[in-house]
Image (tube, rainbow, N blue to C red; front, side):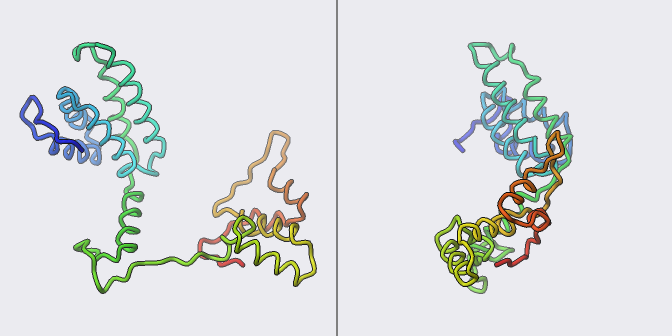
Length: 226
């Protein structure tokens, strides 16, 4: 972030960004907009919008997944409406206020930020308290599970072709069924049907010889399918 100048009221802009985020976390609409406005009147609306977008991911997240899109849409509307030679006094401030209100009123979760932080700590082998590299913390490596190695990967295709040969079955058909019954399975599937009641997964499984009851069964995150 480029160096920002103090606001017209004498506030440090980085402190203003911080209090803006803390107010949104606490759902304080009036104060949150007050501080966002303080940045914007200082010709630093870009910094405010960037922070609002970060908040939408960092503090709102899955509490309201549409918050990111709403902030992005508001920012584009703000740029389109307010920067056409208009004086600041004629700006449409409700656009900024709307984005702040949406974030303040949204259910909140820090799961996205905490997940990204956790993975960073483990992949870097850092001490979780000091965040410094730690000799006692070995950098984490994950193994690629068998269910990921299907016909769309070279090693998976070789394995499946060999398995098909050992079973005396057509390799292409074997790989297709493997994809339907193993690799394409979802962790939280829904029973989705068209207007005429057709489930397209069931239909394609029927045509390709796969067991639709298996293909539509929830897969477990720790499942080590082969």
